[in-house]
Amino acid sequence: MNAADAAEETPGGEDDMPWGEVTPEAARRLLVAAVEAFAERGYHATTTRDIAGRAGMSPAALYIHYKTKEELLHRISRIGHDKALEILRAAADGEGTAGERLADAVRSFVRWHAERHTTARVVQYELDALGPEHRTEIVALRRESDAAVRGIIDEGVAAGEFDVPDVAGTTVAVLSLCIDVSRWFNAQGRRTPDEVGALYADLVLRMVGAQK
Amino acid sequence: MNAADAAEETPGGEDDMPWGEVTPEAARRLLVAAVEAFAERGYHATTTRDIAGRAGMSPAALYIHYKTKEELLHRISRIGHDKALEILRAAADGEGTAGERLADAVRSFVRWHAERHTTARVVQYELDALGPEHRTEIVALRRESDAAVRGIIDEGVAAGEFDVPDVAGTTVAVLSLCIDVSRWFNAQGRRTPDEVGALYADLVLRMVGAQK
DNA sequence: CGCACCTCTAAGCGCTTGCTCAGCTTCGTT
DNA sequence: AACGAAGCTGAGCAAGCGCTTAGAGGTGCG
Image 1 (spheres, each protein chain N blue to C red):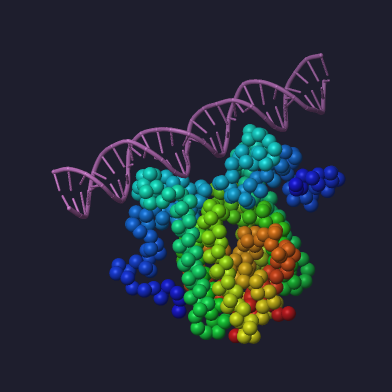
Image 2: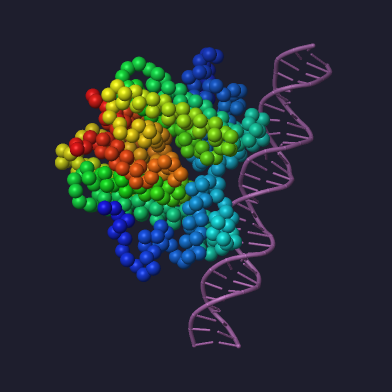
């Protein structure tokens, strides 16, 4: 009942599909199944049999496409962090005042965490389940996300546009606020991802003391 | 100034000890061990052998004091949520303007999540590992926490002290911001719980547009 | 003392886990 | 038609899981 139905697309049109970069199709089905299962029950509570079952395959089929269960998590985490960083950088490198770019960053970052909260939950909260090397790789990506947001705030302060006594602390708080959306957001709830994005963009502008 | 100071005197002075209400001593040792293990590796990745081992006991000893591993999590979660709610209510029912009470609530709530981030991590992020009945019990406590914060904001708006277009949304954001401290806070980091509490109190006052 | 009671351990039961492997099918290529 | 590679399955292994049980040891009370 999901993305698999929309498979009759043009060969080139897979780029905007959530997991379009994962091939072959069986590997993608397994990965999508893993995202759902990890988000619902957590990495450690999810069995390889459950993942394979959701993808309509036998348990053994998983190991043709992925060496271990942890490699599946790493692939998910890597792609998700790349996407998150891409979203933040697009806003940071965009045009407009620091205030406009910060609002844009928060709006799109939050929208992604709400819209794709299943994926985001896995990406943001299952970091500790990764092996040591994979974890350090992902932590490096997170530092870059931090730097992107801090950059916008720095520029806003330098331009006299923001009033921020503690840039590093405020950066952590802004990112933390956005990330945690994936924990509480409920698709059946009364707020749309766009509404939460707009609300949060406003709250963050207040946090940095942006002048209207 | 904060709720912990209001602790009453008991022979032995165990009330201000973190898990002082858990008796007998062996049961408390097991519970403390479980908190550490759950916080480090997550509920599902923690074995009963690991918990018993940290408490210096054999695996079977655990089942003399707790019926199941899930009951251990429930006890931790229940006590933690009671404490969190107590902190918020103490601030909400305190004296002073809405701004002072909101700042007090955030400051002490954040300080608890930073100081006792091991416990808080379990309390806040292992909710889904609880059984259905235990989960609904805890969810009810969370709604009361939400109501306590919303109450302060409502009063601030009514008094013309705050400028908040979306009270419900802002309440969620404030709580989310505070709770997520337990995820990223690091005792070896360069910020003390007090510093984070002060920073966050300031940020939240900005979010609600409090006038100085 | 004798006996009930509580706490705790050694051993282990039944089951599930991540993962493997021999073999079957389905291809594209020759 | 013949063939090797690739995708997948059924069966299953070693290890580890939550939890149970029989019984040992200490303590308090008649």
